[in-house]
Length: 382
Image (cartoon, rainbow, N blue to C red; front, side):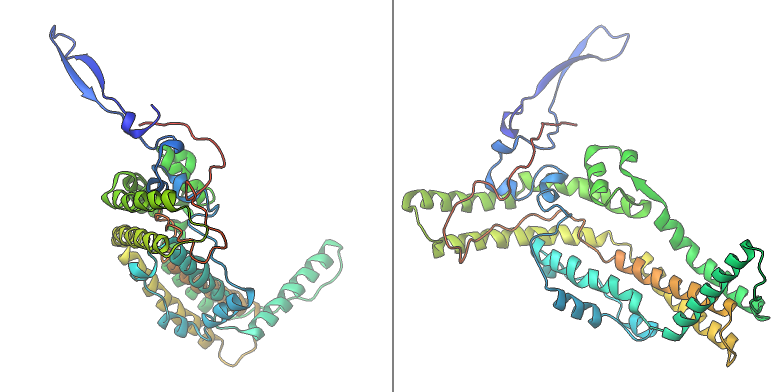
């Protein structure tokens, strides 16, 4: 079979049962995941029948050629760097409106720009240079002691903090508050565990795997979405406009991009964006609101534990035990912020490409496909 419109029903004859002597005839049609690229029209190629139709051309999930200067990105990170954990908590983002990310370009700006900058800024939250300096000093002290001990040389004993039992109670509370999130994010589904090709491709694009809870929520949605555009009403409407544009191009053979062509492609883009908003609404309905609330509640707890450790220390000098617990709590807070932001990422959804208007192009050229093939495809069925 070379194309969707060439699919033929196959007649199969099956016995009703092992004992029955009569036979019935039924018809079954193979479910086509995709067809050979040369048989797809322009609108169909904006999406596709399989995962790689949506992502492989960009090389990194949905990311397009959107770019940001190093200076602007640095400013973006600084914008989302907060002086205190409380300030960072108050500025936790919420999911964007579908209209804010309804094209791959908008999604890339959100995912590779704002969200990436937010994640990078987490490491800069509530800077404490004195704590880092003391931590480095103790680390060097312990390393020097270890070297001397190996050589049989005398070494200085590091003082033991008598408040350690109090610090230890904070660690117990830290563990109780964060174990669930740790287990969720370390329980990974790998591509070889998936039941079908599309879901394994989705995990491969995620650099080998995804947390099981995330996979269970979104991979069925991805698998469904990647098949829908090809035969959707929106796809047919886009192709109807495209056919008119191509007929006029053939008749007029313009050298520069005509205004009517730009307007036509913009109308196509509006239909694509409208379709993508529907996909985003479905995706966001799956977002685990209860889990986001749990992350926020846990962040509040750990911020309180961070202050509790400081209160236990009081006005006394920093000790190894104090530094160890403070660093553990701080890392716990940062990991929760990062986990929350991970759930804000929408770039795994297979959005349909926006048609290129070619507005302002030096030379008008009507492309046959919105992307070029880099390797051959084979027909697959399920």
